Every structure is written in C-alpha cells, then in structure tokens.
Image: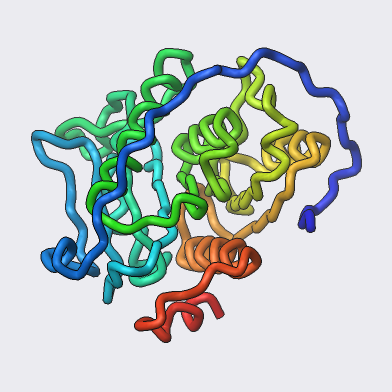
Length: 278
C-alpha cells in the first residue's frame, strides 16, 4: 500500500528513454556449513585496506545456516566507506549483513586531511558506481550467506541519490531502496524502467530544516514518484542535512516490514531479531 503525503499538484508526465541494458555475472555463493564458516567473527566491521575499496559488517550471533538480508550502504559526499561503522550500530547490530563501497568521486576532506569521496551523476560515474555496488555484493556473497531476494540499497545525501539511480536502473536486483536526505536523480531519465520499478518499495527520509535537500525538493520528488506509481514511505524529522538516530531506527523498522510482509523467517538463534523492529 502506498504511503504518501500528497502535495496539491501531481504531474503525470514521464519521459521515456531506453534503459541501460547491462547484465552482471552471478558469483557462486560460499558454502555455509559450520566448518566453512567457523572463522566468521560476527558483530565486527572489516574496513577497507590498500587492496579493497569497501567495508563489511557481519551481525552479532551470525548464524551460517540463515540467509541474511543485505544492506548495501552508499555514503554521503565528503565521506567514504567507513561511514558504515557509524551507521550500522544505529540501524541494527544483528538483523543484517552490510557492505559499503567507496564512492567514485574524490572530494576535498572537510577536515583538510586526506581524501574522501562522493557519488557523481555523470554517465561514467554512474556506470562505475553500478560496478562497485555489484562487486561489493559479490564480495559478501563469497564470505557469507545472504538472501538473494532481500538486498536493500540505501544511501545518505548523494549516496541516496545514487541508490535511487541504480535501483531504478536494476529494479529486479533489489528488494527496496532507501534514500536518506538524498534527492531523486535528474537527467538521462531515471524512470525509464518505471513499469519494473513499480514493484520496488521506496523509503524516503528528510530533515525538516535541511537546506541541501529542502522541503520543496522533497515535495517535487514526491510528486514525481507518486505520478510514476511507485510505493513510497515518506518520513520527515526535526533535523537538518544529517542522520538522526530516529531516522536510522525507522529505516530498520521499514526494512523489517518489507521482510516480514514477504514471510521471510528470522534466525531461530536470535530472539532479539524482531524485538529491534518494535
């Protein structure tokens, strides 16, 4: 059921365009016997190194026999994949596996030290972002037991915009998309595959006092998404351009709603699984 706050005007016009016809090879999942996964340390983060451009998270009390939902997190502008370390404890330490690829755009560090990254909407950067997202999913697939039908793409700021872009381009690959303080992308018709995208639930969160993604911007995106017939849940918070605790808690609750609506079970060894979503 669509959950929206309807603005006064709704535009029904969408521009058609040929979608990007790109396919991604399937990587064989890892074996999930107790012996094969005995070395997994749950509740810990694996951050990037010189040989990698992503961060990984394994939930507390990781149960190898259970296919976990996966959150793919796209960080905001001026950050990097290590933002996952700050985000997951506020989302859930036990409900999901998670991975965060590094952005494609080198940005100036706010502290003036070292490099940080972002996500740009040029065609070259979008293609590179898709590659990094699906490569990071393959990394998790090799190490852990993921539910292939429960992969959620989420992001903050420009990461939310890129999450929208990639999810709309490849809607069959994701169970839902979450944009936190990130606008819907413009240019190159992101709704070219709108018929397929209508099966994809959307969580959109914004700060009431955000001067980057303003209330007017939110209303404009809401009009477009509603006109496109997408299933939208909108949440607004008394905050600016940031990730308040309640926003991330609501993101967890929304993902749990999508999972439980589909009838997916919780890990038998983790009685807290549903408690966190309450």
